[in-house]
Amino acid sequence: LTVPLATRVVFVVLFVVTEFSILLKCRNEVNKEWNRKSDPTKVGDLIVGAHMNSVDKATAWVAMFCFKFIHLDSIVKDIIIWLHPWKSVQPYGAFKADGHRCYLVGWASEDMFRC
Image 1 (tube, rainbow, N blue to C red):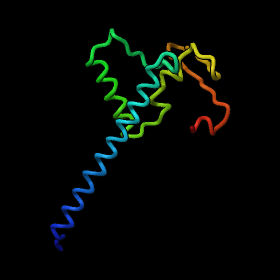
Image 2 (cartoon, rainbow, N blue to C red; image 1 turned 90 degrees about the vertical axis):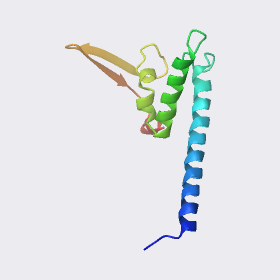
Image 3 (cartoon, rainbow, N blue to C red; image 1 turned 60 degrees about the vertical axis):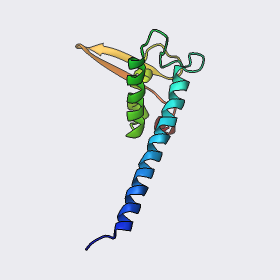
Image 4 (cartoon, one colour; image 1 turned 30 degrees about the vertical axis):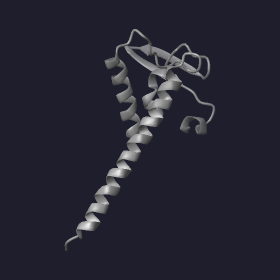
């Protein structure tokens, strides 16, 4: 069974266009997140300043892009933010026993956790 050349070409073109559009969408989403998280007046969870060189910024951006591309869960991606002890917006607890740390983070409802 042979597939006609035109069908193969159309498939390859559509595949490339689809992948390219997904990459562009990821890039746009990462840029929005970068701008939101690096603004100290809004969130300030991403510290980007003049002291950082371009390699450090590019590495952080590429990591954010990879996380967005593979749809990494936000609780895993932002675990440092969720476990930070100096926040007053949600229930939080932490303790250390036998050299191991345990963190507890609370949400008001299951819907807020899944969001």
